[in-house]
Length: 443
Image 1 (tube, rainbow, N blue to C red):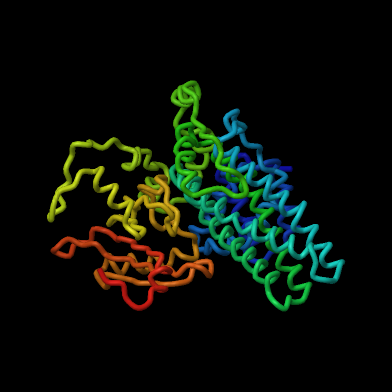
Image 2: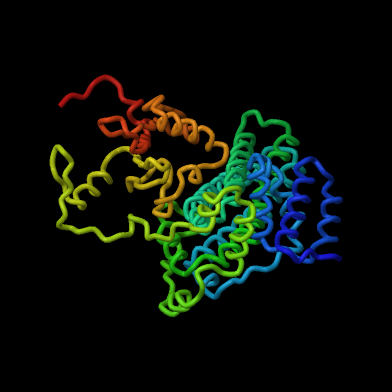
């Protein structure tokens, strides 16, 4: 084995192997080439190689399609992460995520798949079909597991310049949501489709969910373990309850100890893995601006966490309100509001109960494009580009959510009186009740 020692050489060899796969190359040949060249590989090197493919023009969705192949290629050589004692503490976000994964794994391997097999063998509609239907309904709640990851852990990865994995993983999450939904629809159809059609759909959903567990625990968490601080994890924990959990009760409140915070304060800002990733990213960056974007993440405290003077009055042109009054009013409005500034960064959202789309304080200061799955990013880019250029001021959408709620969504350009673009206001409303109203009810 001739293991390449130079960081750049290692990176280019990984890119070569992944390019071979993306061009339709044989997996066994790629595996043989990898085993000949590498004894082990860091998750940072894998994700940086995927990042270079994206930088060279490969659609993130193409990497998404090969995500399982990449995991199979590298899984035996991935250097182990560095778990901390806090990760084994109930209430810590990592503990919670792994606990959910254990229950999801059990739901699939101990209930869903055995019931599928017994139902096929039985040849009639019986209790196994009902149990399979219920297991799939339970599996649908994985949406909260993924939403929590996408809205709390992905922003944390962005903070440290780890941008390629979230793009790929979010797209896979959405695919998995679709696979589960399809399986649910098939087992609920009357009359039932062919058993082989149901088998293929259920097994596909199960396979992809189990593969995502591997990606979360063997790739995502080790990377976060190297760069995230106890204070980072505390912010993640503070955001989790607003989104919810999958198949578990809300966990106890976890906070880092004073000793953990002190130990973290005495350590360098970036761990070896973080430094290595950023060094690779520097080599891949085409311009100084890209280098600055990658290596100088914004570590400023989100404005949402800064103290507010309770005596302050805010002049709103038609009157004045205190911050307390303003916050209370926004919480009562029957719409979701999110403001994205002129640099396309999320600056504020209304914190109302039962939001249509989850928001957490972790998104404040984050690029709005990184707050959407890859398949939605071109549409968001088109809308905001039109606003920036002054070609339009409003875009409107309406659709059914989960077949139950009718959602109305507007993107509105916010401008000064002279037309200068200040940002975009997203206004979302659950209009299900409004559509049901009939006749009149006057004051």
